[in-house]
Length: 353
Image (tube, rainbow, N blue to C red; front, side, top):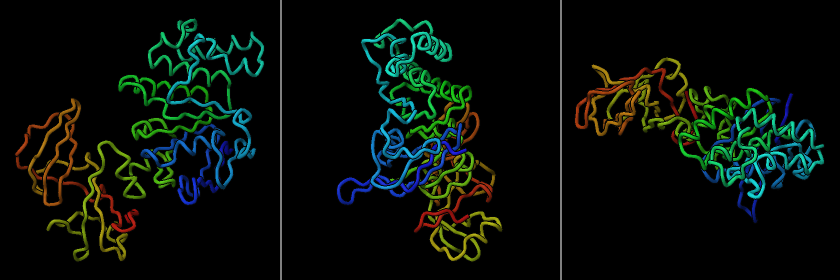
């Protein structure tokens, strides 16, 4: 069953400033969909339209089969969690969680039961009498989530809810949000610029760029088969190695080096002449034979090590488990499997293999 249907959505400011350009997106009931992209790509604008905080120039939005394109936000049966928490500083935690229910004239006994239910779910029962000013950032975000949960809405909307937290808290809250969705199975649309959040949280990811969806698929599919150069560079940490190459006989060459290709990749090349060759850092390995290079920099992180290596192809980043014995200035050789390479047309930036 489709929970949210976004059809042909456009948003134009002034005469020709296009913020969203013909967006189509179907979200299934109980699905967790991520809108991810760099700042200014239109992801928060799209979320605000689903929430009823902004109106589209053209197109329609339906929630639960009901057209809500011009329905006020309060009548859409949604709950939204903001980046800034948006808590009432003069109210206790319990008062903040219960406020939306009180505005809907829910009886006090039901309000109290809802507050206790979500407080236990989010492990904040001991904070119910405190004011927001006495809470940490992570605790405030839990309260904001609790306020949304208390309403038991048809749709959760998250607008970069973890951006104000430090790295450790982001990891903890990311796990809380995932567990929350597993418990409630409430349809969720989540906006972030952090591709790690997108990869770990979403059932599907919509990668946005300049007001359009570049690719919509599962996290694994997007990582393994990025549809465009932009998606290949944006999804993955660290980013994919990409370098220009050209046809040479029945294969590809770059910097005087013949690049590994398999039969399927050769067949997919078609008439393309100028191409981009991509390699994930974890697929570039130090070997006894391969492309020669010199280590520029080594970055140990504990469980793995990154090495930036200067080659005839350009600078390549390799990721290896554990620690490397190589140091800056050491000569090395790099190798990879043909099936791990990603090929893109240099002009259209679309995937060709």
